[in-house]
Image (cartoon, rainbow, N blue to C red):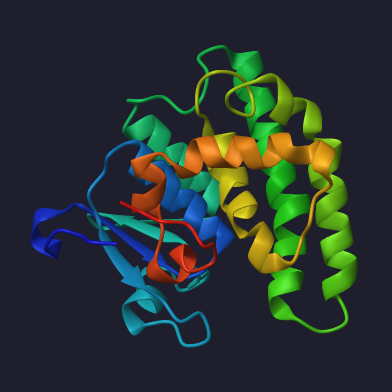
Length: 212
């Protein structure tokens, strides 16, 4: 992802090159048209400046705005939506905001660990594939009924889910024919230039899809 020189940006994102929760944050930033410095991080060997910025966390994603370090992907995503409110990625009504938070939390607690288990390899791969497939199929009514997961407007829920849908072929998760709505949902977002901007070269290589 191309970025402007560091001196011109107030935002810096420390991000792994292939990580669903980092990708979520990059999707939020792309949807809002934010320019920022992207610092690729090897999670096995994080850079010293990240260790200094977040000594009790020192993981990714970590967002730095001026001298403030913000970490945990859901916290970063909500911070960005409040700090840069246009376009809004959360509804205005408190009850609907709560529903969106619940959905994002469920993705983080239930879906993401399955992705991580598959990527880690070993004996846990097949059970994780099976469970991720089940979780997606349980959510089919949301994929069928709307342009986006919770309606006609993109939200933080879509930013959490779409990086996982993008990775399904690479993860070896095959959905049945009656779940075609999931792929249709994904394609609507994949074709958006903002989604392309959100990806690293490593993530683009996960699917055989042309990018302009």
